[in-house]
Length: 305
Image (cartoon, rainbow, N blue to C red; front, side):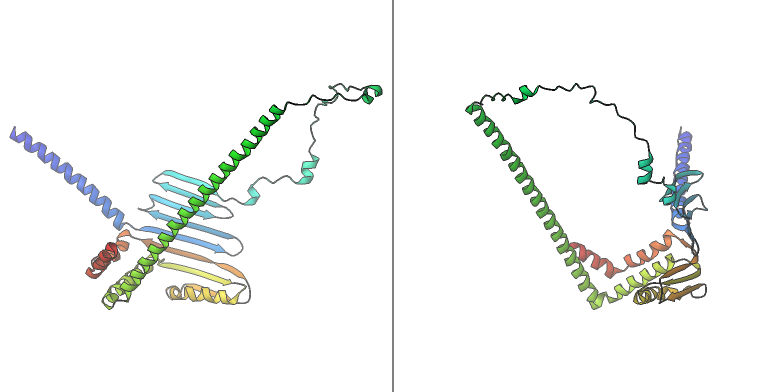
């Protein structure tokens, strides 16, 4: 009996270890297997785009293509969960009928109903006879009708006034809720500003900024090549965009040719990029920030207020 019980416990232990191993393998797969993305864009003679996001050696894939219309596909293993053509060209829609085409269409003949109705003609002598006077209505009936007529508008006016009061009441409540939300948000922003300006928190702020820079640099594609020639009617706007992309241009200066044009509106070129993102690489900077004692302290203070 004891031997059988030990065998059962051994089997249960092996099953538990197998389940824990499977869970650990799934967690490590999600954390360590990267999500790969690539994009091929062209804006020369024809505008085309092909964007792919794959995971786990292509077993899961998201793909979006543009060649005049947008095609979106989502696939897991061999099964396509979504495959649809979106935003097609106007040429693919049936042409609307022009006014000339509508006029050219034959109009179906409708049956003449006037012929079926006999036309009654009266004698001139009969027309000359005076019409009989209608009997006068009773004053009581007139008074009742007036009461009914005057009662209906009063009820409708009361309903309209109730609706207007309810509408103004709802708008007032919404305005108050928006005002309260704005007030609480401004108070939180002021608290954050006070915390940042404190000398004791400067090191924590620098740590957060360093980790954010690492995340942004990690998300950016590790391979990027191509050429871009762009310009706008306003030269100042072209200069502003050039200044905005200049911090990242140093990373791809050898493989990316960027040519601004200040005297005409133009956008052409081609771009090819590849990149990968691991969940663990995104979580590690967040963990480093959470391990900071001062950050946890200020976070507790911010929640308690």
